[in-house]
Length: 97
Image 1 (tube, helix red, strand yellow):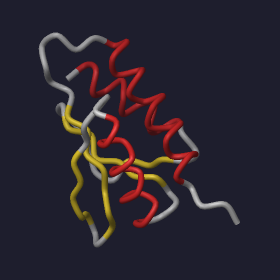
Image 2 (tube, rainbow, N blue to C red):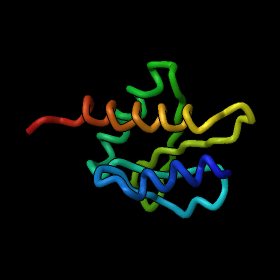
Image 3 (cartoon, rainbow, N blue to C red):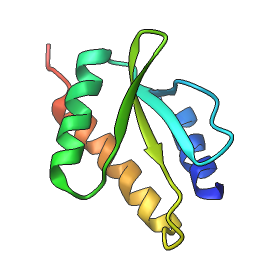
Image 4 (cartoon, one colour):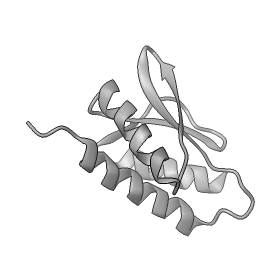
């Protein structure tokens, strides 16, 4: 749960992402502020890499990403790497105007 709370704090500090629901345990529901289509594209781009795997749900009618952190061998460096990958991939899939 400690690592999930660390991840949650990184999401809260981000200007590009927001928490979608309270996260008192090991599941963090979050989304990119860019909207549903961007979040769906982000999920697909992340999962196809095989480096991490996120799931999704709909909360309040909005597409929401879910990251569960609970494997006993997971270390902060793994979660930090996942967060960097999420941020980098979001920039890559974000439409340019």
